[in-house]
Every structure is written in C-alpha cells, then in structure tokens.
Amino acid sequence: MGEHIVPGSGGKRRLGVMGGTFDPIHHGHLVAASEVAARFCLDEVVFVPTGQPWQKSHQKVSPAEDRYLMTVIATASNPQFSVSRSDIDRGGRTYTIDTLRDLRAEHPDADLFFITGADALAQILTWRDAEELFSLAHFIGVTRPGHTLTDPGLPDGGVSLIEVPALAISSTDCRARVERADPVWYLVPDGVVRYISKRQLYQSGTEGARS
Ligand SMILES: Nc1ncnc2c1ncn2[C@@H]1O[C@H](COP(=O)(O)OP(=O)(O)OP(=O)(O)O)[C@@H](O)[C@H]1O
Ligand SMILES: O=C(O)c1ccc[n+]([C@@H]2O[C@H](COP(=O)([O-])O)[C@@H](O)[C@H]2O)c1
Image (cartoon, rainbow, N blue to C red):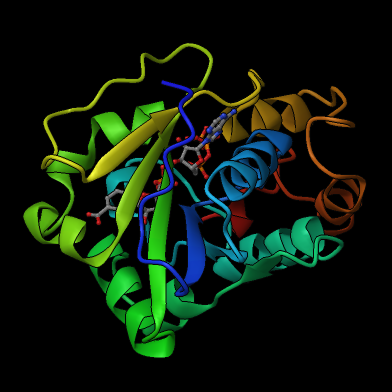
C-alpha cells in the first residue's frame, strides 16, 4: 500500500469516478477523491450520486435531488471535480456496471478509475456483474477508519490499494448528529451544513422526506 502505481495507457484522459449515496456528502469523500486524483494523476474526478442504492434498501435514503445538490455544492469550488446525474436519471436500482458503461459511452477516450472505501471494496463481489466491472475500470480501494483494506479476490491488476488521510466521518454519523441537534460543521462543507438546515434534512419529525 502507498506506492505510486499509475496504471493506464499513456496520453489518454484519466477520469476518476467516485460513486456514493452521499446522504450527505462529507469531507471523508472529498479527501479520498482529492488524494486519489493526486496519486493517480487524474485529470478529473466525477462524483456520481446513486439513484436507488439497492444494498441500502433496508434504510431510508433522502431524495436524489437533495443528495445531488449537496454533491454539487460540496464539489463546486474544485475545478477538477464534477458531478454526474447518470445514476439518478437512469432510474431504477443503481448498479455500478451501468454507471461505468454510461461513463465509457460519454468519454470513449478516457481510462476510468473507480474509487471505493475499504467497506465498499469488501462487498464488491456481491455487486451486479462483478466479474465484468474490472474490464471497464481500474479499481482503487482507499483506507477508511474502522475498516480493513484488503483485496477481496479481484482479478490480478484490477485493483490498487492506497492509504488516504484518515477521517473518521460517515454519513450515518452526520445524519444522527443532525437529528440530535449536534453540529456537523467541519465534518461536511459549510454549504452542505446550510443546505441540510434549509431543507430540514435528517431532523426528527421530517423523516417523511426520506424514502
Ligand atoms: N471517511 C471515509 N474515508 C474513506 N472513504 C470513505 C469515507 N466515507 C465514505 N467513504 C467511501 O465513499 C463511498 C461512498 O460512501 P457513502 O456515500 O455510502 O458514505 P458513507 O459515509 O459510507 O455512508 P453511510 O454511513 O450512510 O453508509 C464508499 O466507497 C465509501 O467506502
Ligand atoms: O453495482 C452494484 O451492485 C453496487 C452495489 C452496492 C454499491 N454499489 C456502488 O458503490 C458505491 C458506494 O455505494 P454506497 O451504497 O456505499 O453509497 C456507489 O457508487 C454504488 O452504486 C454498487
């Protein structure tokens, strides 16, 4: 872990893909994307908020438009970051295989690098069409406090594991803090704190907004 591995063909555009439910987006997501962008010489990182995250169907998830707008607010100041509506606009359950096919069609000349935290990487073999995912993108697993980063048995050369600055932040904890009226300042970007307040997300008694 921690080597400067830079896979991909010379001269091609290098596009990072950071998929997530982002309910809400927090500094753990942003630091992971920034660190991978620097280490893998990425030209851009596209954040892709999920439409319907099927492996979170047991929990309530905020409306896609709120999660999309928070992601736009959080990434707006970084010229290397952008946000895709691909998973939201496709409709139905979100599968990364579809995300990567859409991004490939949109950026036929780019090499794709899909960024996942240690917890998500551990589940990757349960994802739809898992064996095909690795032909569409190189996977980059990043460290996350409380989780062990290991290769869950992916094809040779399909994944790189890297250490990123440790931020013990989760969306679950941010939601619980808002519900308890505890602060989320400095866990999420300032604009996201204000958006949560404006839309009264995560507050007790407003759970009807989540489906
Ligand atoms: N603090 C963090 N450090 C590194 N990676 C992270 C961190 N938080 C989330 N990630 C990664 O970002 C991606 C999107 O995560 P997601 O939007 O589900 O956030 P989350 O904090 O895990 O949310 P929740 O607590 O609701 O499950 C996943 O690959 C996840 O592993
Ligand atoms: O493709 C799948 O079957 C699949 C199953 C679970 C999660 N994912 C993707 O993993 C990323 C992180 O998801 P989540 O649920 O932890 O926010 C996001 O891009 C999801 O679309 C993908």
